[in-house]
Length: 262
Image 1 (cartoon, helix red, strand yellow):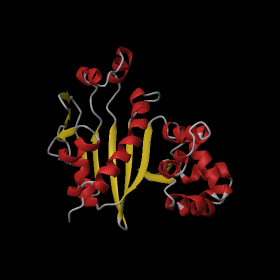
Image 2 (cartoon, helix red, strand yellow):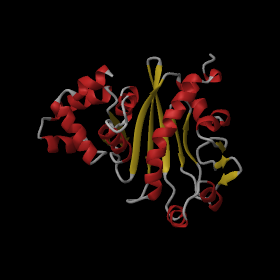
Image 3 (spheres, one colour):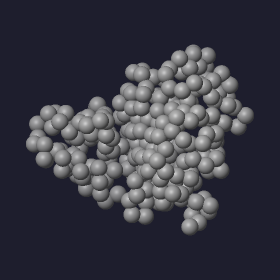
């Protein structure tokens, strides 16, 4: 948290976060134009913010896009704000909600979290049914080869459909697959309204990517969920769900005995 507070102490870095809060996923060139600062100065400020995990970068072809990351702010809230009366802390709770739900772009969701484990153990937590059931309540049936179909199983509910497949599979580094089809039985299981079921089932499939990067005794996990149309209802649903899901993944990975054994 020392890195977070040091990063936030500089007004130029706070302004960079404000710009990303207003429009996430900007390039270095775009940020330089808005701040009217030299490229080298902006790069140094972004490096400090990225080191504090307040900014996450994603490569798109030749461009590097910068996204505001809410996880450190959430950690601060969990450590201190929950100790006070909720009515007196309402302003900060509203800030936490805003960072979780509104700072991402309309068509992307990007979130970074650090988990105290190894890439191999985190990979198991992301792919093996024994562990996905613990924090997600579902599992995937697939051979995990790129191009192979995937079936999502949530208890007795099956989610399968055309285009639901593995996109990338690079063990311990990168995993990517298309987000599941909204089937009628899934809609009933999660109690979607008829309006939401019609709207979400008509949306094209999106793609989620997990990037794993070792960092000392931790793993930096970045989740990139893309391919949403502007105004996507699924995008609004998953943006809130991902924050909780990744928190549960962190807890399961760091505490489950089977994932702590060498």
